Length: 142
Image (cartoon, rainbow, N blue to C red):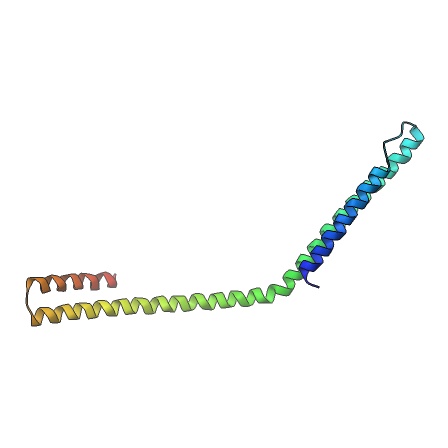
């Protein structure tokens, strides 16, 4: 069975226990006025409340066991997921390095193109483009 099935069964069991316990407590009726009957009633009331408390503690223990066993079963998968995540982060870092290298290469090409344009066609506009390309290249180096 799966942990969710176990928990659903436990929920049903707890609900049944609660209904039975309430039924038994209600079945006691009101506390009698007669001291001897009242003493018996008090003992039965205390016994039922004690059993209810024991059942609640047992249900909590069973629930904890179910969850612990479920975690134990999926723990290797969580470890594998952690390793995959670490590998993905390493790949993302490599992609970031490649991206930075490509941006730098684009800046160098832009600067070289602007320099070639200024050499082949000297003008104020091309000089401005060379200065702008140089600033872009320098900003990539920072």
